[in-house]
Amino acid sequence: MTTPSPQSYQLQLDEKVERLSALLTPFAAPSLSVFASSPTHYRMRAEFRVWHEGDDLYHIMFNQETKEKYRVDNFPPASETINDAMTRLIDLVKPSEVLRKKLFQIDYLSSLSGELVISLLYHRQLNEEWEVAARTLKETLEQHFDRVNIIGRARKQKVIIDNDFVIERLPIKDKTFVFKHIENSFTQPNAAVNCKMIEWALDCVKPLTGDLLEMYCGAGNFSLPLALHFDNVIGTEIAKPSVQAAQYNIDQNNLTNVKIVRLAAEEFTQAMKGERTFSRLEGINLSEYNFTTVLVDPPRAGLDTESLKMIQDYDNIVYISCNPDTLADNLSLLCETHDIAQAALFDQFPFTHHVEAGVLLTRKESS
Image 1 (tube, rainbow, N blue to C red):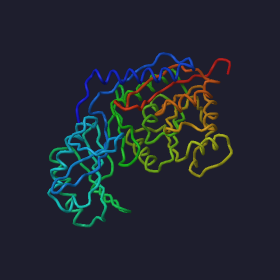
Image 2: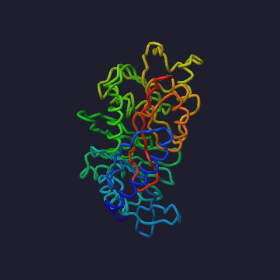
Image 3: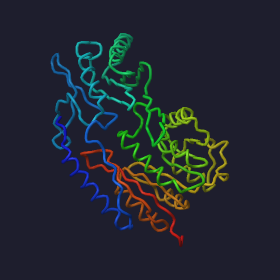
Image 4: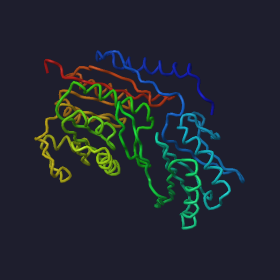
């Protein structure tokens, strides 16, 4: 793949700024704070199909428009760690019949600290011979990388050689936060821009006090850094692996004022209203918290109407969005009671149409 020029990157970023600004204009949003990405080596994870051609073996991707496959020997969007691993891995797998047989996909997860999880996906069951070969593969790769974990996946089978996660260390302002990022679970793909997102959120809440509620908290990407500012933090997340990772991250960062509960946003809304009780909230009395601020980072579909009405009860709303269209739709209701105090664009995905946005909403004086 060719490396994009700085000029072409700036052109696509300008288009995104124009598009997001237009969506936010009806809500009297202030000028956007724009957080650019490096145009290359920004993705901490990447997935490739594998093509077998005689004795040859290589990564492929598919053209989204023509659906035609094309060979990928290097991938400029991916981290330098992944690019280095791509070449070394193929050279080691290609001559090994046990490692290459019916291998159809390779997934990479890396970290700023240089750790790797490499997942090898097969159309066959994996046996002890494969495990021996995979462990040798791991040991050989670790001559070049700090830490490598290998996962073999087949139908109803997952074989882990050491771990299925990397330990990430994110520099946030003057502190480093430790996060466990699990293979096949959601993490922010652009680590450098993610740090800018967290720092922007910290700047937003700097003048605020009280307790923070975060919905869709994942593994605590925002909850943990923001916990240094608020008295208490409650995070909600439905995915069990993310909840487990979040608890690990709380312990590793020595935080005592954060609790993560495994509830969907809709369930937590019901709990806050007193409509339902949940055993997963045992030991947590929500009425004892002084929630002044809520942070939401919902999926592309945005927030449902009940959740939107629930967060309108809070004086301050930090809304992180991976879909500006649903953000604008949600703002139609939220801006009945709140004003946009700050707005930002985070270019998590250069050279794609995807835009990550952030808005800080504060209650209208008359509401």
